[in-house]
Amino acid sequence: MAQKFHLAIIGVGLIGGSFGLAMKASFGDDIYITGLCRSQQSMDNAVSCGAVDSASPDVEKVVKDADVVYLSTPVLQIVPMTKKILPYLKSGAVVTDAGSTKEYLWNELSRLLPKDIYYVSGHPMTGKEKSGVTAADKNLFRHKCYVVLEETTAPKDVYDKVVDLFRRTGARLTTLDAKKHDRCASLISHVPHVTAAALVNILGLYDDDMNAVMKLAGGGFKDTTRIASSNSDMWADICMTNGALISKHLRELKKIIGDIADAVDAHDRQAVYDYFAAAKKRRDAILDYTEPYFDI
Image: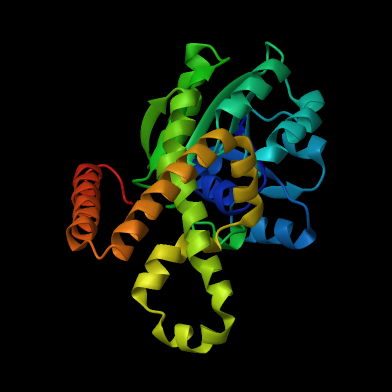
């Protein structure tokens, strides 16, 4: 009997669990998935929902004999975790990750991994405001962008096999180098998350009005702040590992907001109108372009 493909998932939460479910849906009985979880409850949830076949807090038990190891912890945990699993990886194994910042991970892992352990990095541009494996969904990646990094230590045939795993999630693949990924992800994902949190945190300045504010909260508040409910550990790590670009773009955003505040103070209706009109035109164009390819 042919040996099953062995996938090990490190961090069976929303992303790792969803990847496991997608792989199970694609491979069926031809894949065996092990998962590393910290608590008994997480292990039970990961197995019961079908994201993994077995779960353990024992690193060696999870990654031993794995063909591919999928790292889906917060970014700052990925390098220390790679050091932990490294002694137990077989020759020819592939390490991949779902980290949201790529240049930091490439610089670290490409130096850390030996020549017979390959690194193929990716980033699924998807998620939910809920975290944990109980929120996992086999269709989480479907019609979403999955970035595959150009930088790799793997030979082409190995690289292509890992890319095929990403493709099996139903995602739309795109290829970028690490620097461009981090620059673009800061603009389209990281800064919006920081800004959504700011829109919620500003309410803390007006505690006396909170009862009235909550009565006014409607769809606009929910839509613009949904991602503020995302995992705090994950987003703190993203800011630490893509900090220069995020801070640069936040300062540019600060100037834009300052300029519109000045226009409002000056009662310059035309400037305010132009501000909203330009935003609508750009947003509509982006959605028209992306709609045939991605669900956003």
